Image (cartoon, rainbow, N blue to C red; front, side, top):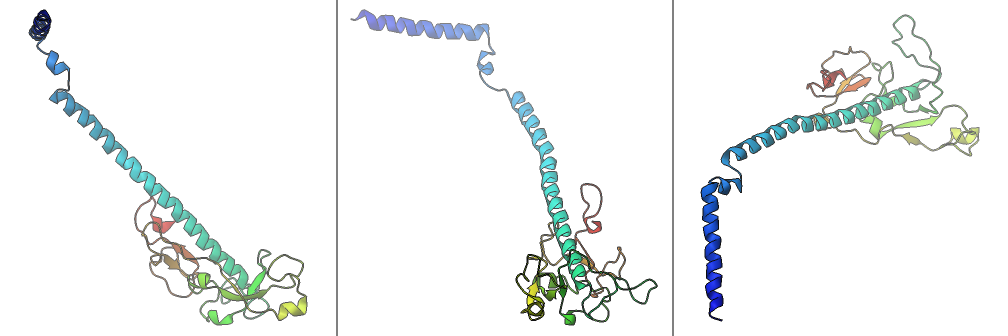
Length: 233
């Protein structure tokens, strides 16, 4: 039993001697087990370059998403403006209205658009300056306006179903809403920064004349990814 501890000490001693001899033969063996300072610097430099390269890509991806939302918001509001305009044909006074300034040559009555099933029945929202009958404000597209049936639509599916001609004339007030809400300008993050232009203003007008809403644009002067200004979209 006494010989076992001696043999164990001999084995341990021989093991450490072997380690020392290995270090003498290969003095870099201890460093090879880990990273040198130079290797760490190179690794961190490569990581920094990769991170700096991905930041612009991420920023462009976010900007591209905002641009897609801006285009969709502009399309939605312009469609609502055009639909409102279609519903004014034949309204206030009854008969026909002009789509151009009646003082200009060529102005005359216009036929109702077949896509329009109702006609606006609230003459108070139009003033004498708004000859083209575009929405007087952007908010009115959300608030809605009083409308009535355009002709006899009793055979078509809709709010005037199952009514004869006399009932259509006596139908209760119907309010038509053209927009659920005014969207936020994705480029400014606000609802009240949209730039408005009336039908009597040029495309480069910088302020709204309060006559009507013919077009709407972003209130941002920043440049898009394609080099254009958002306010020119």
